[in-house]
Length: 152
Image (spheres, rainbow, N blue to C red):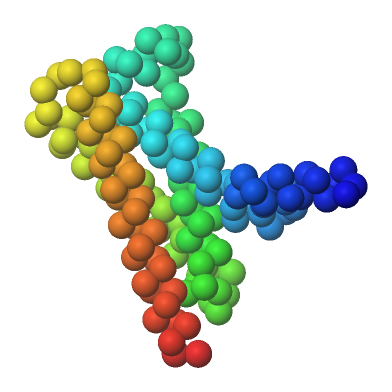
C-alpha cells in the first residue's frame, strides 16, 4: 500500500474528507463553523470565562463571523437550494445563517438571564442548547432536502 493510499484510508477511518476546494468550502468550513458556534455559545453564556482565556481580545465577532461563514456554506450546498441561481442561493443561505446565528445569540442571552451565575452551569447550558439547536437545524434542512428528492 502506498503512502497516499495509507493517508486516504486513515482519513476515511477518521471520517475526514480529502483536501480539495469543494471539501474545504462545504465540509471543513461548516465543521469549523460548528466549533465556532459552540465556542460562541460559551462566550455568550459565560463571557467571564472567555475573558480569562483571551484577556486582551474580545473574540465574539471572530466566533460569530466563523459561525456565519460555516453555516452559510452549509446551507449554500444543500440540495434544496441547488437548482436556484447562485445569487438566490447566496441570499437564502446568508439569510438562514444570520437568522440562525443571531437567533441563537438571543436565546443564549435570555437563558443566561434565567440561569444562576455559575460558570459550569452556564457553560453546560450554552453547549447543550447549542448542540440541540444544531441538531434541530440539521434535521430541518435534511427534511427540506428530502421533500425535494421526493419531487424528483
